[in-house]
Length: 92
Image 1 (cartoon, rainbow, N blue to C red):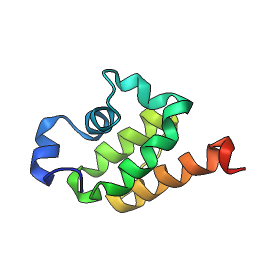
Image 2: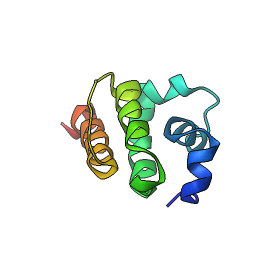
Image 3: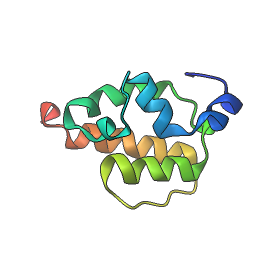
Image 4: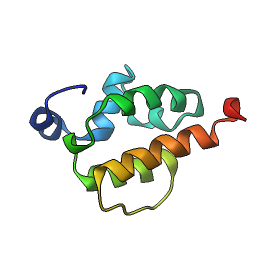
């Protein structure tokens, strides 16, 4: 887990945490194809319960450009990881 659950929720959310862990000053860097694979290990280390399901759904929308509404943090995290891997050309 990257940080304490309560601390993560209070500090600004999943997208902010990912940008911080990616050492990026801009949230928009999370969308860059060159950075997507770097997100996978970060996402794997995050306890899904550290962020709300809405936070995970928002991350999917922002990073992948897909509107999805999952009912659990675990399903949302697993989806974003699988889609990043699935759409990355180096895995094909």
